[in-house]
Length: 340
Image (cartoon, rainbow, N blue to C red; front, side):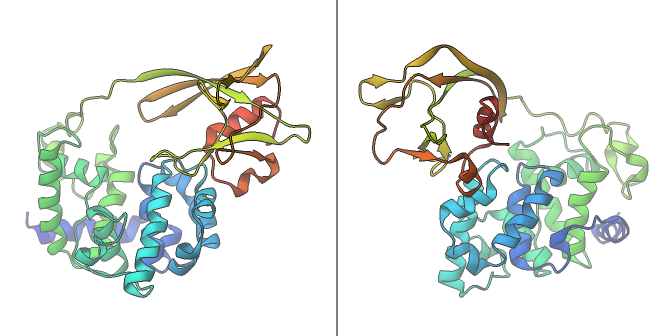
């Protein structure tokens, strides 16, 4: 079957079955950009609420570029993978500085913006601007592997190379790059799912090599799993007379600027380790980050130490919504009866 016919089947299916999503109301380039960044490594149902709040707080590129890192990360708090928020804000500054607040329409220009790679550039160019630009994410790669019976493992360089080639051929033959690319992603999210795909509802079932040969459950071949790491990390809860909590601001690359509870072998004053109240374990909880399964154990601390200047701050729990912090902090505070 021709690329034009395949593209047409996907476009027509999308027009009938597309979900009503907030960034589809006007296809504003900024809204599309924010949605695509949020949807990286985060489920749709989680993103929806965050997207609405984020867009209310930062309705355009100018407002995001003018915001502080703390404000942006606080609005992102709970979505995880906070480097995305930092790069999104850096990209907004780049757009204001080099493009006068106008988000470019071409993939080449978009890829010069901080934090925008090939996939995001293709999404903005095609969905917001209607340009002929392919996009390949996990959903698209899975469809391509099944449709053309590609044997390479999921997420392997070989499969991704082939997926980009096929996606480029198909979008070039499409009548609407916007509808075609969104249709591919929607098909992967709703029909051609990793497990138990709804093949009978798929518009491509008669053309799908995996379906015709009854190999849908075999393709794409699974990628090698990362070994799971089990970690146990102590957290230290230090409060003052007013109920404020001592927190440390992270300076590392991945969590830079985030506020954490003191943890591990933390020393607040050089040579003076924290002294835990005997028997004052407040509880434990589990937290998973990619391939790491972490058990946090929360301890109450015997006395208020003198914190090193610049690294620590006393935070009112009521103000947590205004500062960037990972979700495990809220879990730990709830064990102590602090916060919601």
